[in-house]
Amino acid sequence: MSIGRPGRLIAVLSLLAACAPRPVALQIRMYDFTFEPERIEVPAGAEVTLTISNVGNNEHVWALVEAGYEFDLPFREGDNDHVLHRVAVDVGGRETYVFTAPTEPGEYPVICTIPGHPEAGMIAVMVVE
Ligand SMILES: [Cu+2]
Image (cartoon, rainbow, N blue to C red):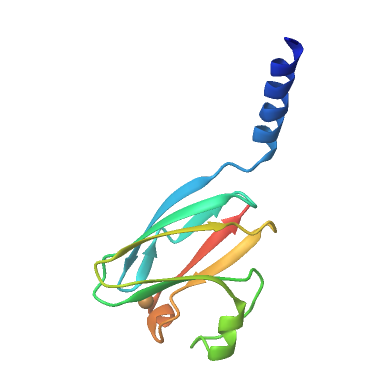
């Protein structure tokens, strides 16, 4: 029996842990008509767990848009091709959504895609760093 192996295994596991982005868990609240917070930051490639609560009086959507994609309001059908993740939350509801953050650092717009809502202020940003 070798006593060298367990130590080597621990060293390798420690190295992997140091390289892998740490998972993050974030809470988001949706109001009529804002996201709180308006800016979230996540490490590139990290596993992200969002808990999204809708405390407004309308259904709302959390939609993550490609970084650098330019769009006008109202958000149009074709713009949906540039949505990376979408979570709809009913009035009074709460959804937990797990996804892997983009590996490309940048500022990813977040909008509520329901017509009139982003115009009223439901625009936020997810910063990948
Ligand atoms: Cu909305």
